[in-house]
Amino acid sequence: MGALVAVAPRADAPARRVVRQVVRAVRTTPGRLAATGAALVVLALLAGAFAFAAVREREDAAKRIATRSEPLVVRTQEIYRALADADATAAASLLSSGVEKPELRDRYEASMKSAESTLVDAAAAGETGPVAGLLRELAVQVPLYRDDVAHAKAERRQGHPLGAAYLRTASRQMEEQILPAADQLHKLAEQRLRADHSKATAVPQISVAVGLFALGALVVAQVLLTRRTKRVLNPALLVASVAVLASTVWLVYGLSSARDDLARSRDDGWQPVAAMSAARFSVLQARADESQILIQHGADNGAYDKQFEGQLNALTAKTPDGLLSVAAARSSADSVTGPKVAAAVAAVEQWRAAHSKVMEDYDKTSYTSAVDQVVKDDGPSLLAFKQAEQALADATAKDQGDFERAVHGGRDALSGLGVGVVVLALVAAAGVVDGVRRRLKEYR
Image 1 (cartoon, rainbow, N blue to C red):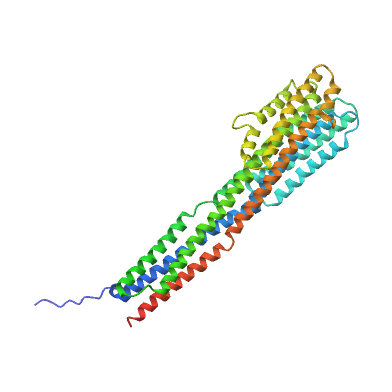
Image 2 (spheres, helix red, strand yellow; image 1 turned 60 degrees about the vertical axis):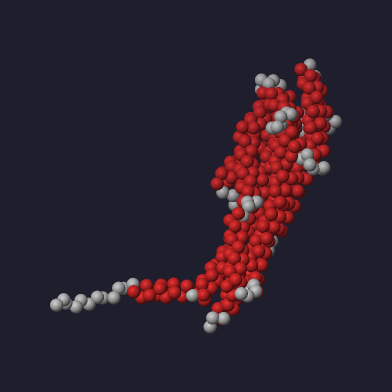
């Protein structure tokens, strides 16, 4: 006779029973209805969460554009402009015979102070990484340049030939160390602006897809529920569907509107500003080169003459990368900046002709006449330079204003959108809960 063997119950038996009970419950009509409701609530909340995340990411990027990226670009432009202008003015002031002209002295001091104060402001903004390193480098190099220029002026006032040597040292430092560092700083600022702009204008594909999926699920659920119960649409579920639809439409419209404004800030703002600034920097460097040609008296073996011609050729080249050609292309649709760029083009051509006369007199040993054309208020070379530089400065200021207005419009388009999509998601979830609850009451 076989022995009776006691079998111990399995440890997971209670859990298995619970699972079976849940499965049996879900297979019933009320169970399926409750499970569907729970899934729809999760989808509605997910749609709201993804929409909020998309809005928040773009709000943060737009805020960085307005408060960090764009101000840094403006500061780096001003640092480069002020340093290039100071170098050009210092060279021109040494050409003046006798006492330095007050307007040149004042312009030099104003440019140096602007560069130094802007460096301080940029450093105070809490920059880190390569940007902070370049700011520290410039903070060291700029005072050294100022000292060399001061020595050059002192020697010049005493009639010593060392003035030209000191200025050559200062200009070489400006050309080989300071301006390249300022240029790299400006490029890093532009890279940051482009990155923030890209994030602020990115299409929210995932958020829209989740919203449409949730809307589709709600519609399908209502259709199936209507067929099974032979009743009209559930009002609460209908409210939930409208809330999800409104949230998705608002998300698409709001982000599209912000994207249009931010795209305009790029196309009508910082891209034209970048082109104008590049041309303006070249004009200032050409001015310094022209003055150095006369100051050095051939001691530079024609280096400054070549640099001057190179700057003018870069400005007036009719190729796609010509500085003024790029500026003209980016401002062609602007009724204000377009004519300004055209005026700059005409002024640079006049400057080229005036410089030819300067060099003609210089080669004929009419040194005083050559200098007068470069430094006197009515000198053709000086007048052409001023016209070109002022036209580009005006165009830059106008495009900068366009940029700031467009960014402000983009931020306004996002205002309230994040809170709105969250509220609509909660309304949708509440609608689902109420609609399912009403149907479940019928089975009690």
